[in-house]
Amino acid sequence: MNRIFSGVQPTGNLHLGNYLGAIRNWVRLQASHHCLYCVVDLHAITVPQDPVELRSSTREVAATLLAAGIDARSSIVFTQSQVAAHAELAWIFNCVARLGWLNRMTQFKEKAGKDRENATVGLYAYPTLMAADILLYHATHVPVGEDQKQHLELTRDIAQAFNSMYGVDFFPLVEPIILGTAARVMSLRDGTRKMSKSDPSDQSRINLTDPPEVIAHKIRRAKTDPQPLPESPAGLEGRPEAENLLGIYASLSNITLEQACQQFAGASFSHFKAALTELAVADLAPIAAELNRLLADPGYVEGVLKDGAARARTIADPNLSQVHELIGFLRS
Ligand code: TYM
Image (cartoon, rainbow, N blue to C red; front, side, top):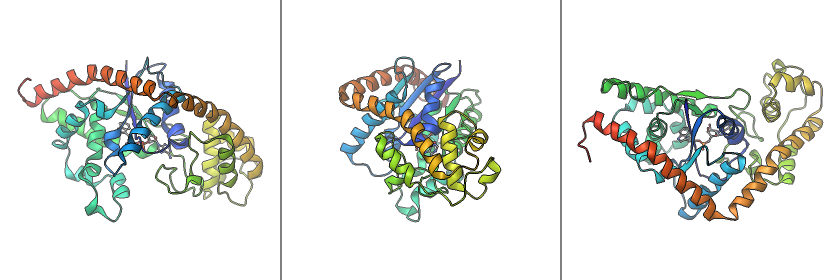
């Protein structure tokens, strides 16, 4: 059976982009695959984090995964820092990946911005740790949003380079699983920018913790344009906000963008936004309710993560030993 691995950073609230682009897909894949889902706290510290907030965000993000329908009995849900082999394999991959490959990473350029000299070495090496996350478990498929595609291409390059350096067929070439309609959910305030945890405006995103009246308010205030909705996706050309909102609607109701356009052809945004609100609230309110229930017992969530880490280590440790053997390290 193919093995699925994916990860999410414990930095602030998860939002509708994380949910539609990745997590909802993680839930579905559990029925047919062996899945590992990781809260990537080692990735989070590539930029400064407050220790108290990091700890509570880690619990909250893990609880959100459970609330969204990840079953911690059949899937392995764990925290990256609790399985030491991730950091160790990442170091080995730092000695496989080339500067030229990392220099091409657009996410580093975006995150480091103009103050590149001041970015941490960890932020630069972020993609080699991500490759280690995936390849440590010999995962074959990685469900992610569009923004992670380049990192997965690098993961393939690292796997291939390692295999050829040591003359083996050890690491698999991973395939991304990127869904069409919600691969890139955009900001509610600007349809050309990605919906993101780091956007300073909370109005730009729908958080999975938002109560119904906040979701309704954000959708009502979401940026639009003056024209009625088109009858087909061709009519969305040059209308990024309309395209984004219809894409969200299509994704939430499991229909295509084409079908969403047909359903609202000629309608006003106010009519459409009311339907979108109803749909979003119906989908997200049960997740928020379950999340609040889980957060009332932080010990339970931590127990789930500890158990997940122990199960993850039973796969990770023997694989890392094999890597040691291939490289020529002495047996411990
Ligand atoms: P992160 O924490 O930024 O996001 C988690 C997942 O949500 C997706 N996503 C989106 N999808 C659609 N529209 C959006 N606006 C949107 N924003 C976020 C992301 O694509 C991602 O799938 N580097 C990763 C975490 C990671 C990882 C891994 C992922 C670490 N190791 C190994 C896969 C495999 C990240 O920062 O995701």
